[in-house]
Length: 423
View 1 (spheres, rainbow, N blue to C red):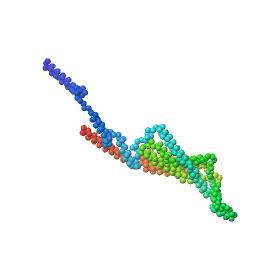
View 2 (cartoon, rainbow, N blue to C red):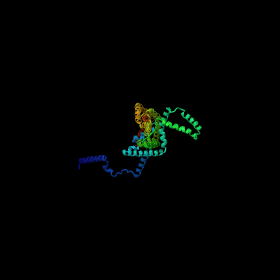
View 3 (cartoon, rainbow, N blue to C red):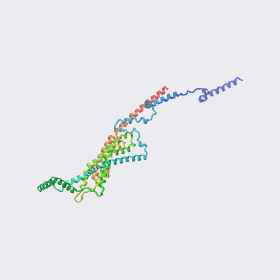
View 4 (tube, rainbow, N blue to C red):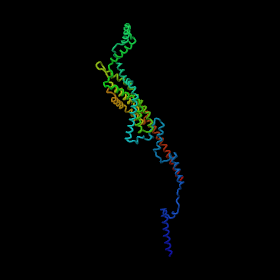
C-alpha cells in the first residue's frame, strides 16, 4: 500500500469519527457509550420524603401567603374581614352566596308552599286561642263608634241637665209618703231609665240583617286577633323564604327582623285604632242630621275597621322595608331625599287605595306614611351600604388589603430570587 493511499484512509476515518461524535452529542440516546451507564433512580424512601415535604409546605400558612400563584380572590377576602369589625360597614360581601343560588323554580315554589302552610296553621291555632275572647274583642272594636254616639247625645241632650237627679228626689218623696215598699230600688230604676233614653236618643246604632252575621263577625275578629298574636312566627316564615337568597352574615338578622316586623305591624294597627278611628268616625258621623240617620251595618262597619287595621299595619313596615333595601345597596339616603316629592305623591296614592274614598281618611294615612318615609331616610343614612362614609371606609380597607398583597408578592419574589441564586 502506498503512503498516499494510507493518508487518504486516515482522513476518511477521522471524518467518520467526528461525525459519529457529533451525532452522539445531538442524540445522546444513540451514543453506544451510554448504553451501559446507569441512570439515577429515586427510591421509595426518597419519594416518601418528597411527599412529606410537600405536605408540610401545603400545611404551612406562611408558605401559602408567600405563594405568588395563589388565587387573588382568596386573598381579597381579607378586606371583608376588616369591614366586619366595623358595625357600620358591609358584612355580607365576603360571604358565600345563599342556598337559593342553587335552587330551581320548582324548589322555590315548594319552599313557598311549605312556608304558607306553616303560616296558615299558626293563624288557625291563634284563632282557636282567641275565640274565647271574641265577645270582649268585639266590644273593643265597637267602642270607638259607640263613643261617638254618646258624645253626640251629650252635645244635643233630649232632657236638660239635672233632670234625673230632680226626678229621683221627687219620686223618692212621693212614694215614701205613700208607703212604697221598694224604696231601695228607685235609684236603680232611674239609672236604667236614663240609659234607655240615651239609647233611644242616639242617632245611630248597629244592626245586622243576616241571621249568622253576628256569629261570622266573631269568627272574623278571632282570625284577625290570632294573626296579630302569631305575627312574629308569620313574619319569620316570610323572612325564612327570603333567606336562601341572602348572604350567611345577613341570615343572622332573620329572627330580629321577624320580631321587629311584628312590632311595627302591631304598632300600626294600634295607631289606627287609637288615633285614626276616633277622628275618622267622628268625621263620618258629623254628616248625620234630623233627616239623615246614621245607622251603621255590623258587617260593613267591621270590614271597614279590619281593613284600616291591616292598612296601617302594613304602612308601618315602610322603615323596615327601606332598611332592607339600604343594606342590599339598592337605595341610599341621598337618593331618597332627591325623590321625596315623588314619595309624597305615591303616599297619597297608596292612602287613596287602602282607605275609603274620602280625603279625610286619606290624609290620616298619608301623613303617617310621609313621616315614616322620613324615618326611612335616616334609617338608610345610618345603615345604608352606599353611604359616602361607608364607601370611603371600604375603599381604605381595599387599599390596605392591596398594599398587603403587594408586600406579600414582593417578599415572595425576593424569596424566589434567593432560591434561584442558591441553585
